[in-house]
Length: 213
Image (cartoon, rainbow, N blue to C red; front, side, top):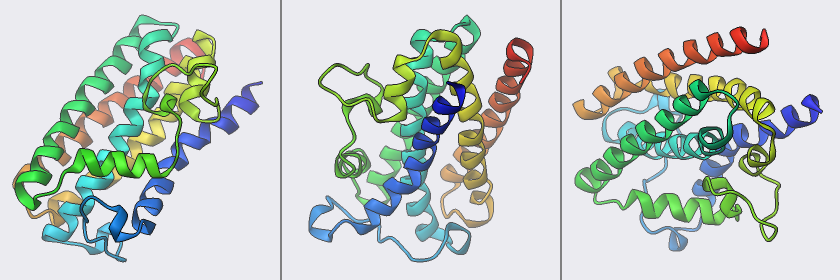
């Protein structure tokens, strides 16, 4: 059973890359605005080009983390995990609000609307944005699966999958000091790297203490 749930848990981890790919593939007419997506990877971008890429990618990444954290905040076996998941939701929603404001101020872009367009283009069920699934919503997404899991299984899957998810955010954040054009974004990237590194240590400690993992 654990193997089956672990296989399904890879869906949400892969979904960020899928969403970015789908965004880049959307016809211009279907995009509310454009971030002028470059074929270059982030480590080849600088200034405004990097900042636009970072704002979209990190906002998508945060949106997925919030979706994963919803079931854990409600149903994880231990209060420590519920508190951690709630903090992830609060912190990353706040950071998404900051990035949305900067996208508007710096580039005249409606980032929340853009994210909604990307998510809708994937035809994800509502469960992926953190709402408990119902009989009318397919249970094919990772978040839907998390809502179904018993508390201890949910806790193991959430903690073990949030660690690599955080690691990818940290890798993005580490590019910002040398490449971001705005000091505010450099500062945010530093907070993300510091905060999520501490959360990774906490999650590893919890998994080792409770489950010997």
